Length: 180
Image (cartoon, rainbow, N blue to C red):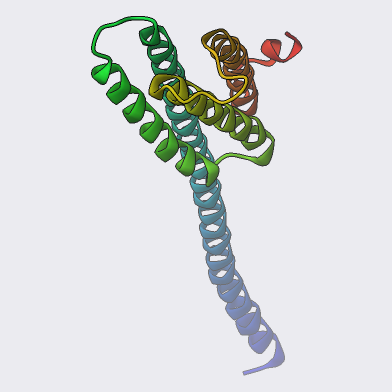
């Protein structure tokens, strides 16, 4: 075998090896691309899932706070009536307990800037609850009165609207609400 034949054989082997390596490298690049695309899809799914969980948390917190406040209002109105108020008290206790549970879960999910106002609302609900219960039990403290409780309830409806605006803004739902 002369040098020309050996060179031709080496060139042929190099061509075959190059072709095989090219196919292998192309396949590996395609596999990496598919893995990256799969990872991106999983990240998008996770973000959407987390956003949906946060949305559900916000809906539950908003609903429970509204029900709690409505039950406080009903209890306050029941103070002036002579009828049996056991069912109204029971509804208030259930609304308070439900709100406490929902708020406890929300504390673990909400970002700090929303948690701040939610915490304020929750504390204010508890304060009004104490006032209304003391009035109902006939042991009011100084400053406890039905008109004072009503003013606090009215202020809480405004605080709930602000909390809802913050939640919606956090979800990116309503940028226009932030200016109001």
